[in-house]
Length: 464
Figure: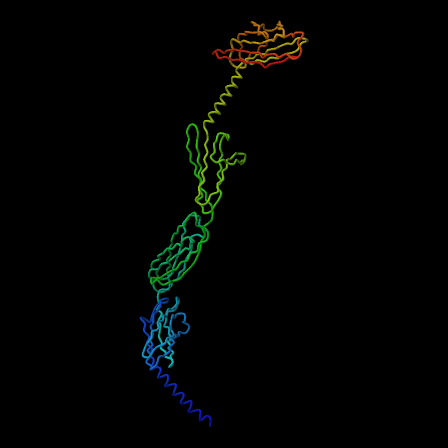
């Protein structure tokens, strides 16, 4: 009995729903418009869906697109709307095949749901075949560069497709804390199965650039579509680099030397300047006093300068030539004195005690290689002593009395080179003399054949 009663109800419900759907499709219409239904991977297609409400009342509408696993291709906004009676509403949406999409036909279903039911319409998106490009190369020519050295970035794109490409270019950006550096590297058209490479040079401030730098590069095809993106990095070494230059100016009196050192690196460092100088310290005048060190027994003058990048240190000193002249004159004077001492006649006075008397010997010698003439010897004997002439020696030529004693003179004529003479006499002290008696020095004078005069004196003596 229940089955017979349920069957008419199910039948009536089915008829009612079918009528509702049919009514909905008549009361609400959907129209899809697009400029094209085919595109390349990475290039978007724009669609406009127009929903017309022919119902007697306003309707709520929701818009939905289904594309199997291609939902990431779809871009849509404002997909819930309220449409008035006898009004329409437009919904814009985009379908963008992702890079790498295989050329093919891809179905999508558009669904519009209203208070009256659901309307659907299918569209086909065709992904066209184009050249297949691969961004293969992004690298720095070197992993590390010296301060101030030019940086070279190398890029490459390969065509692995079945069609020759259009003009390809790579946009390179180097991230810098001061200002990013950018460049465009044009690779031109790439034939099938060929790879084109290009190089760009970048310059960095030699005094500030240092550390790690990151490179971002994006390759584009002739449609300005992105082929791919790569990153790499390189180093600029952090180091001090010192360059020195020496200049000078001189005349007959002095020489001025200027040593200039500069730090051409990108970090602070200590410049050490070493200089080996001939002669004595007093020959030099230093603008900046150096330290003195010894290396392997050699004396060095050392200056230290702490220099920041692009900072300069100047060392200056003066070498006084006139001091050399004075030194030479001094040497000449010393040599002249030494030669004169060697050439002038030698005279030495000695005493010996014999009982109560004293024997005096005056030894003479011509030390030069010249003959000496007019040789005269003088000696002075104090009044407290009595001169006793020796029988076996040279007798005085003359004598002259003075207040404090008597001067004796011997005129010897000449002395040959190397010739020696001895003058001897005795002295007898007075009986009432007590203590030491001082004997003055003896003196000799002579001339050579050229008339040059020579003289000499002995040391003073004393007798007890």
